[in-house]
Image (tube, rainbow, N blue to C red; front, side):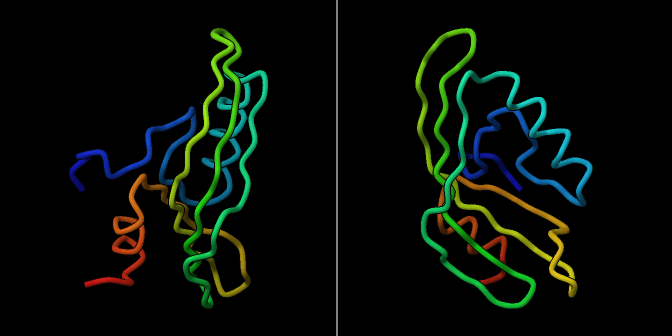
Length: 105
């Protein structure tokens, strides 16, 4: 996939992860860069067995700069039959997330 601003800029973790280990390691390194950091759920755009597309609101204050940051990302979650997340991808554009989820042609 070409970048072109479609993938969410990484706030310290991979924008695409597979399995639990990459996600945990990414969160740990991300949290160290922030004095405050939170992710909250915005809208749920799609929710069926094994596929969820949501808007995530990210807010934080940089540890070194003190700068406050807020942004929205469109996240796609693929899960196993047992409901465990097996993959996540984040995008800055709604259409790109829906396309990655196979919801638009």
